[in-house]
Every structure is written in structure tokens, then in C-alpha cells.
Image 1 (cartoon, rainbow, N blue to C red):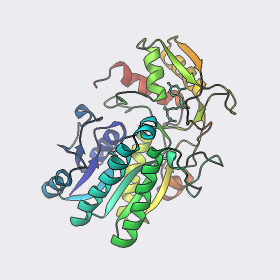
Image 2 (cartoon, protein in one colour):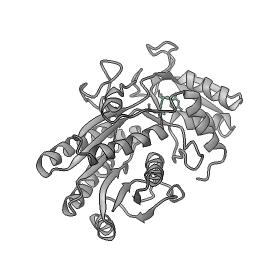
Image 3 (cartoon, rainbow, N blue to C red):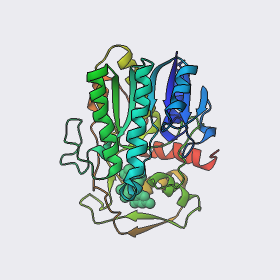
Length: 324
Ligand code: UDP
């Protein structure tokens, strides 16, 4: 029996593939390598293919006996989703229907789905808990919410068991230095600040300093990718034990501002670099902090790398010697 990791060549999927392997699972990564890196698939089998082609998915289900699916294969550029929603609804929603169709055909009943705090939109209450209203403000968040709803319907009609994991800001890198974050193009704060520290870009732009937050810059909840990976394995165990299909936030429950991230990078790297204060980036809520109490209670999840400096240190170790 094997576990299928769709999008396992990407940042988060590659870390889960590693942990699955460490736990003794046979894994198969299915990735189209549009954004993923072949070098990030260091464990298990690799099959290149695209979820838009049902025959690519079926080929994998014929070749391996798939007991559960982890699904990370999605486009995730919020800004692009606003200008090109069609791309997001086809790739993130329609292609997931293809995956579910083949799962159903091969009687594979377990799926762990990568969702996002972007499904909540502008939160009315902080910290965000799972039962708060979900009103995404961009097509990326909407595409993930649509899949959440589809999973509920497939659960009721076909007995698919699911765990939906809503991430806050995934950050950091493999503590053993074998994997890290590498997006092309890069839009995420921590890798961009590290680029500035490494002298690969002239400065880091701080988007907005007039938010209603303690230092005026945006506050986010940075969660170590290693801890995210651990939660995914616990979610699989939960389903294997017959636990209920459910939705879980995964965050640090702690807000860190953009300026605090910049300071953490200065401290960890010992490098001086310029932070340029600029206008707000459209669509950025002032503050996003999640409550992960439910994941801790139900999945018995215990994050271990909660300190922003430790998160940055792992990211910097990777950044300095990045293989891809
Ligand atoms: N940010 C910034 N400068 C950058 C990139 C991001 O100030 O060059 C800010 C952004 O406005 C947000 C935070 O950093 O408040 C985290 O942004 P990121 O794109 O990493 O993740 P998001 O919260 O959008 O998912």
C-alpha cells in the first residue's frame, strides 16, 4: 500500500513526503513540475503528470495500490488569481474533481487536503477559529473553499473521509537542511527578506506601515513547515483510526509583524540590509492569527518550532546552500 502525494515536489508537499517516508510509508509523488522541483522528491517514487489529465491519475492508481491521498497540487498566487480566475478554478477545483473521480473508481477513501486561512477572508474575530464564517476575498481562497464544500458532499454521498487543513503562513525549512522554500517567482516575505540579507536584492519592501497593529505593519501567523508536516501525518492517523472527517486550522497562535520578521532576519543572519517602507499591498488584511486548539485537542498536534527566530534560522540555513 502506498500514499499518494499530489504536488509533492512543492514546498509543503516535499516536507510531508519526507516525514511520511521517515514514518515508514511507501510514497508516490505525482507532480506536473510547473512550480515543483524534481530535486525536492528525494524519497519514494516519482510520477510526472497533471491532475487535468485523468489518464495521468489513473496510471498512478493502476501502478500502485493507493490507500490515501495528500493533495497539495494547486496554484497559490493570490494576485494572479484575481486577474486570471479561470486558471485557478480549473486547476484548483476542476482538477481536484478529476482526482476525486479516480479515487472513487479505485475505492480510495482517504484524503488530506491542503486548504488555507485565505478561506476566511477578512476575519471579524482574532484568533480565527474553524467555525467562523468563510468569506474569501480572492479567487484563490474561493477555489480552496469550493473544494472544502465538494469534500463534504463527497463524504456524505460516497463515504470519502477527509481532513481539511487550513494553513496560516507556512515558513521555515527542513531542520535537517534537505528541503526548503523556493518559488519562482517568489512573493513570500521570509524568502524575500533572506534575499535582501544575502545581497541578492537591494532591499525588502515593507508593504504598509499604517495598519491598526502595534508597529503599523501587517501581522501574520508563521507556522514552521516541519510542524505543518507533522500535523498532516497525525491527520492521516486520525482518519485511519476512524476519526471524523473534519477541518483544522494550523498556525502558531502568535502574531508576528512584518517589521518583527525583518528584525529576526537581521539578528539570525547578522547582516545589515535596507527595509523600505512602502504602500500597502492591495487585499492584505491587517492581522491574521489562527487558533489551532482544535488540531491540538483532536489530532494531539504539538508544534515544536514556534519561535520566529528558529523558523528564520532554518530558512536561512537552506537559503545559503539551496540545491534548487
Ligand atoms: N510582505 C511585505 N513585503 C514583501 C512581501 C510580503 O511587506 O515583499 C508582507 C505582506 O504584505 C504580508 C506579509 O508580508 O503582510 C506576509 O506576506 P506573504 O506574501 O509572505 O504571505 P500572505 O500573508 O500574503 O499569505
